[in-house]
Every structure is written in structure tokens, then in C-alpha cells.
Image: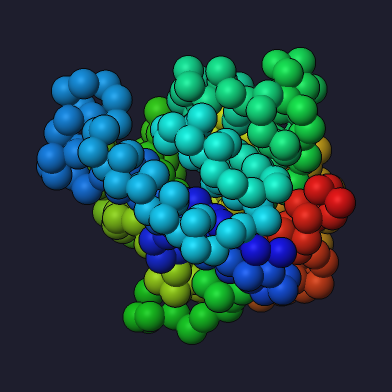
Length: 334
């Protein structure tokens, strides 16, 4: 199949990994990078316009669509695949000549932050809407989507694999992910309690003064190979969910164990399906349970490493790569 793929194509992005997954599944893929629209560079004219006007800069959107039209005319795709392309012109995407038009949402498709009025007005015209949230399936069908496919998140072996530590420091616990209001209190409490034994990496955390007042290691975002190296420096890797997306699993649910890290995550049914508790991962429902797990990791580091190794074998031994998800999507279209 010839796939014209629209998505953010920066190193470590899930969109790039899924595009590569379609290619690895044997399809001919051409990627159009939508980053200029979805994530304009800070303080760029497009970024300033979006902050002032509350919408994407029309010149960047026009440039992306001109590229899509030009490539489509030469490539003649069988499928146009749009990875969370809610801020592009939906009618123009759907009018792109192709037998199939598929939209993929990696986030909660019922969260207004992950849609747009234009997308919602045209949602029913997509041949297939793919979601990583099981609860979205009946919601999308009720909204009028023609067909809906649930797929789990995934890991990319190109980035998510065991790596040697960079530097001799070893942290008891750590979290790699974006700053969010529902994570603030836990991060601050752990940083105060575990100090230099705690690591947090991700966008926005350096701007939290309470973290800076502790001896915890606080860093920016890490992607690709740097992500796997950061995982290797942490004994207990926290897998935290996004309450705004009503997450019951997330990309980290696969990326952490695939990178060889010990999965210590919030207890959900989907997490319990992925890994066996206490032999392949640790799950917690409250802070007291999390502290108990961290105490166990402190006293039994060798056993913690064995649990991490079992989690790695389970995730990498099953079909959880992006190429597996690409094949699931193609099967649904068949």
C-alpha cells in the first residue's frame, strides 16, 4: 500500500515511530511533517500569532497543505493517514485523492484539547478513526464516526531498548514526562523525601520552584537514545497517567519496560493486563503503596532488577511495537 502520512516528524515523536512502523510492515510511506502547525517554534512568528489569535497561523497551514497536494499528485497514495491532524483543514485532507482516509488520535478524542471544531464537523467522513483509548470507541461511534479501531500505545525498538548508563549516578526513583497539574504534588513530595536519589525529566519541571529547592535532579525533556539512557539510571521508573485523557495506559507503559526499566505504575486494569504485578512490574493505588514499593527497591536492588528483566521480556516478547500497531490498523481496513 502507498501511504501518504501526515504527522510530527521530530526525533522521538510517536508519529515518526508509527510512520516507520508502516514502512517496516512493507508499505511505501511518504511523510509530510506537520510540526510547523502543531508545535511551532517558541517565539517564532507562527507561535506569536497562535498565542495572540488563539488559532494556528494560516500561512503555516497553507504551506503544509500545498506540500500535501503536490506530493499526492506525484505519489498517488492508496491511503492518507493523519496522525492527530485536527488543526489542519479537514476538508482538504479528506479531498486528497486516495482510496482510504484514516485519522489517528493518540490522546483522548473526547478531550476538547485534542479536537477542533473543524475536525468534529468532518469526523464522520473519515473512513476509519483510530484511538488508543478504549473508552473512546463507543463515544466516537455515538458521535457518528463511520468506523473506529482501538489499538494500544507502543514502543519503538529504535529508541526504546536497554542502554548503558551515562555517568555513575544511580537514582532510586524517577519520572520522565511532561509537567502537569495532576503530577505536581507527587513530584514535589518525592523530591523532598528522596532528595538526590530522585530524578525528574520533562518539559516544564525546571520552572517549578519547589523542585528547585530540593536536592533532586531536575532536567528537561529527553527523547530517543537519551530517553533510554535516562531510564537506565533509575531503579524505579514511575509510569504516571494523564487524568485529562482518562488514561488507563500510556506510551510509557511500553517504553519503560522495553528500555529495560523497572515499571512502577498506577494501578489500572490495562496495566494489570500488560504485566504481572510483583513479578514483571509494580503497581500502586496511593502514595503509601508507592513508598512501600520504593522501600522494597531500596532493600532489594537485585530483586528489583530481576522484576525489570521479566517486564522487558514480557513486553518485547509480545506484539507491542509500532510495526505491530500498523499491521493492526491495516487489518482493520481489510
